[in-house]
Image (cartoon, rainbow, N blue to C red; front, side, top):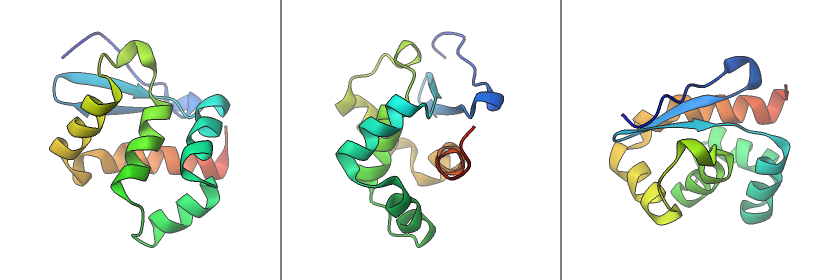
Length: 106
């Protein structure tokens, strides 16, 4: 695994394991604003996710914007490919953490 990154649950962070890369996801304000500008209102995203209608492109965009850059040596295309490779089951725990933070805040 690359680096010694670890998530801080008290800050709403989540770990995402993509191959050999342990990537920290931090849903800070700037990250969520950037995600919202790309994929639309976050409350709508949460509703789609709850209804099983969240698209892979939306998932990749949310996680990309929430990644801590220092923990992620991948470019965006490689990041998206790695998400597809590990599959939805592997990324669901991190996604749940991000969605919970969107709804609850810190």
